[in-house]
Image (cartoon, rainbow, N blue to C red; front, side, top):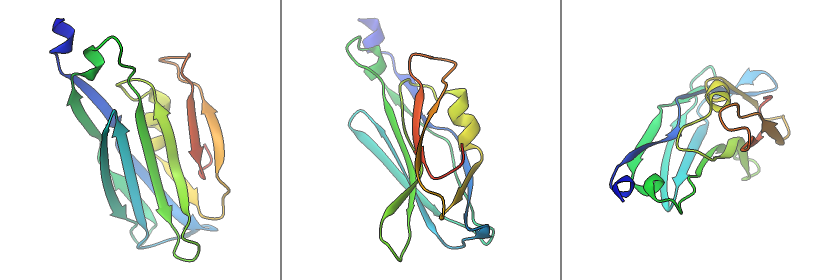
Length: 145
């Protein structure tokens, strides 16, 4: 019963740093959007790439009582994307579901240095989650992971 009263820190996303290019040429002034979802709450923010095509987001955490409920399975959805003006389709730099209240080390490692080229095809990667091997990190991305 006491576990349901405690507030837990949910790590929605660590600090993100990345770079966007077009065949190696940095893309300036591109809107990058981040969507983080936990339970029924969604957190949205965005940034604009600089002259070097670089972008960043601060780490984001929240407090919640949900992990104290034995019937609750914690899942954090992370999406970082952009839309090119010429085709109006969203391109995923990073899209995954994290199955814990803390971000796995492999996730932190990749999110600290996302290198995206708009010419890359999106792929689905399965990353080994050393902290919880039963939950590999399935990532959809146009980065080389």
